[in-house]
View: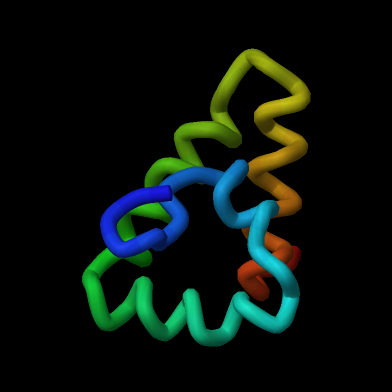
Length: 67
């Protein structure tokens, strides 16, 4: 986790409970952490590691970004 316990990677996002996601999302926006998090998750999606790509995809879905 990054500053103030905010997620900084897909692994961090996937460790959140579903009930924590809305508050964490608001805190990411308030602390200008959403863009860096999404950039990191997109970087992970380009990885050669299929497990990391799958984790990144699930993290985006957990945050409410779906296909």
